[in-house]
Length: 224
Ligand code: DC
Image (cartoon, rainbow, N blue to C red; front, top):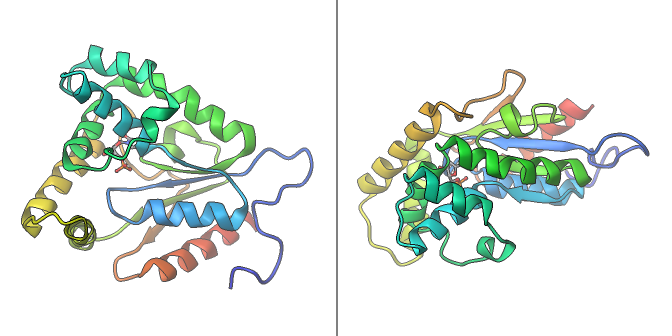
């Protein structure tokens, strides 16, 4: 399906601004897999913006701080280095919550904004996060807001964690996710919400392939 029809939508006419695709939505909605695949399909770079907040939280924790400490989190955000993003300990439950906590601090968001905008402005890209369509790239050519039922998302995350060898009750995973999503949606600065011109994609009941095809259809629709 992806190889047929007109050229990939990411292919630009000379002189046109680089194509930016914003993929926002709550935890475990399938954004990352989808965004990565769209980027590959469109020949665009991919940026997982959640990783920035995760790396900030990890740096704060490594220094013995707490992610709700605004000064410590801002210092960590301003000092963030490429190698901090390449760590293999950015996906545990402590960092899940910590990332969401540092992400509610305005100075942290401000410190990370230029990098994200610069990334998109240089070559275009597919960026996934919570505020890409609303704040980071409000002029993105395509904005997807990817969601799924709370039950389906919690189940995905629970399976992921069980697959990593963790033994954890489903209810605990669901509760942690609910706390994080509520915090991400309720914060004062750049809360998670669909942009007014976002296309909504509900991935409940869709596997990775079906979710990609649904998203690809929306991208092509938007880019003509
Ligand atoms: O996408 P993720 O689960 O890796 O993101 C981790 C946390 O980072 C998430 O709970 C909220 C925050 N985040 C954000 O506030 N804005 C973004 N653009 C991306 C992530």
